[in-house]
Image 1 (cartoon, one colour):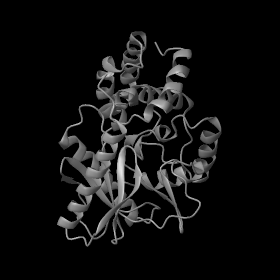
Image 2 (cartoon, one colour; image 1 turned 60 degrees about the vertical axis):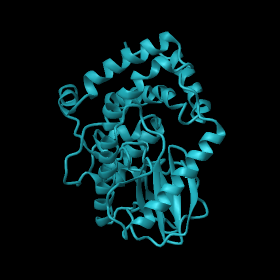
Image 3 (cartoon, one colour; image 1 turned 90 degrees about the vertical axis):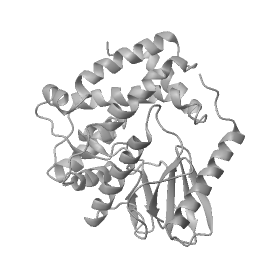
Length: 310
C-alpha cells in the first residue's frame, strides 16, 4: 500500500489547494483577498473573502480518474444544480458571478459556489428527514438531459477495486470476495439495459448519487442540498442506500404523498450491497485521506461477518 500522507503532508495539500482557489478566483476577476477554510476532507472548501463565493477543490479522487473525467463530472454537477436552482429547488447554487464551468489551477480541479448563510444548528453530515429527499427526487425527475448510469458504481468503484491488492488492511480473502461481489453487482448495475432486464418495472431518473439526506446545509432560510458531485441516472433507491428500514419507510410515505413510486425492496437490497462494497473499496483511498481508516475498519469487520453475495 502506498504510504499514507502525514499530517504535515495534509496541511501542505490544504494550503496549496486554498492558494490555487484564491489564484483561480482572482484570475476570473473575483475581488478576493484571502481563502478561509470551511471544510477539509475529500475536498477543500474555502470561502474566498470578502466575496460571497466558495471554492470546492477536489483533493481525493478515485484511482484512475483522468483530468477529463474529473472535469466532465464537475460539469455535470454544475449543470444539474444550476437547472435545479432555476426551478426553485432548495440547493446551494453555482456562483453567479463566475463562469459555470470547472477550473483547473496548479494541479487542482475546482468549482465555485454561492456562499450559504449557514444556520446556527447546522452540523456537517447530520441527516435530515427523508421527506426532503422525496422533494428533491420530484424536482430531479424533470431534468431534461440524459446522464450516465450510476456513475459512482460504474466510473469510480472499478478504479478502487483495481487498487485493492495494495490495500494492507484487507486480507487476500477479502479482496477475492470484493471482486467476486463486484462482478455479481455489475451483472445488474453496469448499465440501463442490464438494470432494466432485471427490474423491468422500476423506473430510473436523475438522482443525487451520494446520500442527499446527509449532504445538506441548514441555512437561515431552510435546508439546502449540496455536493452533487456524483449526480447520475439511476433508481431512487441508490440515494437511500444504507439509510435503514425506518428511513426508507419515511421516504416511501413522502413519495406516495407526492404521487411518486415507493421503493422496491429487492432493488434496495441490491444497492445497499453496492454501497457497502464501495465503502469497503474506499480502503484504497486511505493513503490520500488517512482519517478514513477509523471509520472504514468497523465496516470491513461487519462485512466480513455478513453472508457473501456469491
